[in-house]
Image (tube, rainbow, N blue to C red; front, side, top):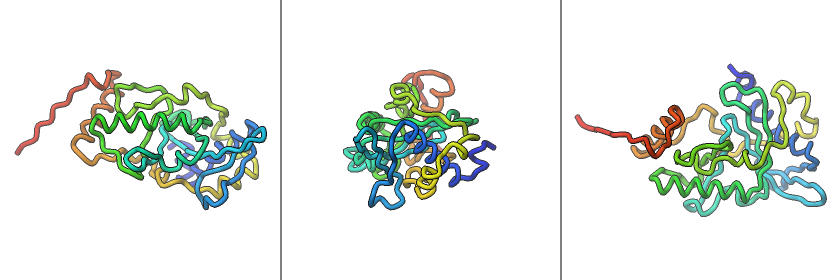
Length: 230
């Protein structure tokens, strides 16, 4: 069992939110919970006299989610912020550190738009107001679910914390803000949850993508035959 799992879902999530906020604070940002947002994970970040809104996302598999609205014409939360502050473990299976990234929301939106368009074009089911996931690290455009990948390659991390040091590193004020935060619905899905497979096309697309990852073959070269009968 990894250290984060030993903590439990809630404690691990709050620890990673604290890492994101502490990373921004160490970059010179003053932090303030955005007024009127209740327990949502949206903050005002101020630096050099400029205030911007930021949505925090945490990830234990280095994919991040936002829900599409109006069939991909809009994105919940993402359309309302200037920045996306991400806390991501360094390794999905054996995490030792948390990397913190700060992305312009417009750049994140471009990647989500590209991913949505690719999925729809290839017959995938993408539900309104339900989290759609995009890969932070470099992937393969031939694997449909990976389209939009690689933003962490263009915007290097702004901070890195070992999991062991986080409790001692995070300032008291930041820890209080993190403890008062609550995950957005799409982040409340357990890390072990798989993708939503609602049609035969979804299952076949998912199988092709997994085979591509396991074999290193381009996704568009993998052909699967389905035979159904009694």
